[in-house]
Amino acid sequence: MKLTTITAASILAFTLTQGYTAHAQNNKGKETKKLTKMEISNKEKVVALLKAIETGDSAPVAYINPTNYKQHNTAVGDGLAGFGALLQQIPANSAKVNTVRAFADGDYVFTQTDYVFFGPKVGFDIFKFENGQITEHWDNLQEKPATPNPSGHSMLDGATEIKDLDKTEANKTIVTNFVNDNLVNGKMEKLAGYFNGDNYIQHNPNIPDQVSGLGATLGALAKQGIFMKYDKVHRVLGEGNFVLVVSEGHFGADHNSFYDLFRVENGKIAEHWDVVEKMTDKADWKNNNGKF
Image (cartoon, rainbow, N blue to C red; front, side, top):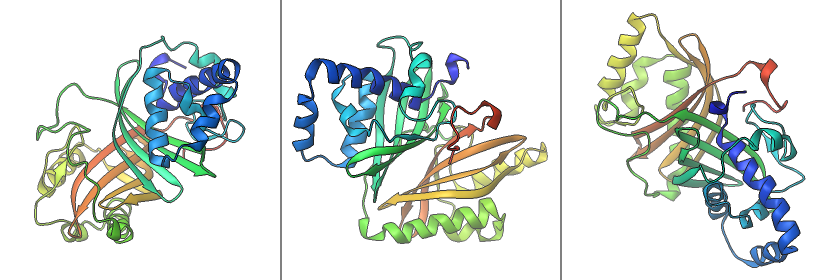
């Protein structure tokens, strides 16, 4: 495996395996006991854990269940032990982590993060909690472009305020229906109903703002014989006005994992961020848990 394909999960595992050993040997469990007594949300745990990739702080390792950690990044082995040899290749103090958005939905926390490791990347991470500890992880990463999209937006800027918590389930339904209607089933005649006129803020690196901008881009690609088709929605998570949809499908000839984050305003989709990652061949997987 090339170094450039090392993902956030890989760096995370390095922090955890190295930190767990140091924590156990040098601190004799004192930090763990201290952290256990602290009242901290699952969302705060994840943000601290991701930041530890950059800082090398060993304390957040207490948030991971060291004997029950199921990995869905197919490029690395299951649990913590499978990461060792690969992660030794990561240069010390080379990573940068800035979690821009963090959300919680029941036992799940999902984040959008600006990463720097072997080049700049944008990633979505999903963590599942059981009894206050992380037991499962999914992610999707994409190279971060050096220039903004046609409307001047980056993959990470835009609204961050979480509101309308009482509308979480309704917003999840709106977004799920949009993805199934238009991206899975191709019912483009229903497209307009999900937006407030032509208003739509787009953070995809190649697509401009407005619903008409999305249509024009997809139309231009279709003329080149390049089509985007979502095959299946695997997971929908949300908090208030933000909804994350995890899907798989095809863009051109590539089999991809799609992570799409939508912001809903007054019952209409107002803003969109995404990360697209090409699926690897199953023969190359390092665990049997699958991408989804």
